Image (cartoon, rainbow, N blue to C red; front, side, top):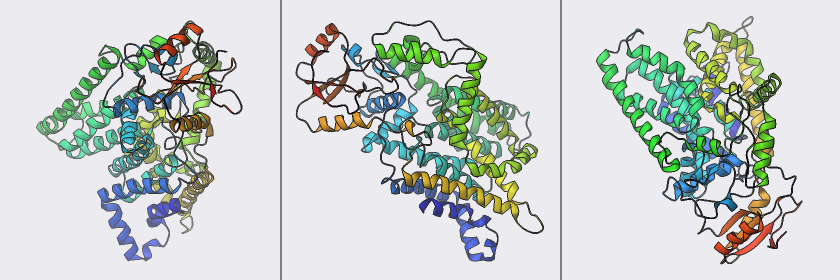
Length: 542
């Protein structure tokens, strides 16, 4: 019901005959035109509506490798550190997407970790996820207000809210997506405003958007920003007609933007240096150099097999990754079709098919040409890499919203023998989205691909039990030979020695002996994750 109320607020001015009530029309017009107020209303609406669904969509339990790595980063930041010292027993704690040498840290860029750290400081990392998703919708609305009329901008941001903030892992998990979407929206919203007015504040927003993209989705963000960058250079050089004087362009735009860029580069260099010992070496690159076999781009074959310290790494890197993709046309076709399915499932709903005829008018719409170029170039960047999940396309969220709403605007003007057929089609498309997402949220479907956000509830249950058990604990994780390597139990927080519960791999007798000697004050357990009902048992050698 709350979803329908939100949609009703955004589409009332579109309804045939609505204009007959001048008081309602004037009230809603004032609401949409008070742009800052509309942004705050949307921000708090997303939070409130998601909280209303907590009975069916509960606070998510992490389980994906990437989520665990991001949570380590968030925990590190929440402890007031950028990274952690390496642990002498790190071999027993070795896990996916985590660096141990020269420091103990996540391999991922820091933006999502900062969001999770804010959430942890407020009580739970998911609070950061909730706030970042609401901020994403607010940022998309701010961007759309620069490109579209106010009421249509609100509708576009409301569509983003309904699509992504209730029944997808963007809200119901810890992978992220919202942060990079905020960056993309800030870049295009500020870009459009700068071309109109050349204000210092907009240049600072643009610099912030670029910094967010560089520290969340750097590769996709770079491709996304290329059209704006080239257009911006031509505008600064005076090759594009503008009423803003050259001195203003230099003083109010270029200098603040250059300052933001310098601060961003300095931070990233310092961050890299603290984590990897080299200002130019990204933690992600270090991890790939240490563990990775598969490559990033579709034209590259996997590297040679590596030697690993445990069977799970061997299965994941030497088998699953190598078998997932080799530089062949058959594999390229498979990963491309998989991405089309993933992106289509998350970003497009069935009712959107009704908008396709009107979408053809976008190619004749001069106001949309820049956004179309940004969309197609950004989409191409997604298909030249091997891996793909919907949050990889996060910078493009605001562009998709603008193109969808502009298609609706074209449909909305279409009449057939005096009947507002186009307006009826728009309303039908919106109704299908509301029903589709509302039904999923009520049914507790956290994502179209449910495994993306199911987590590891059995691990969480054991951890909860141990939290209420006296003393400190060391849980040895003993996998079966046919263990599914996508369900990893060995993850720990930023504090290892001081943690109440530690998870470690059951390795060879010599390494286990060193581990037990180091943690001789802890109660030692063993768990078999591949059992039907995993239970804690006192440790005994296999």
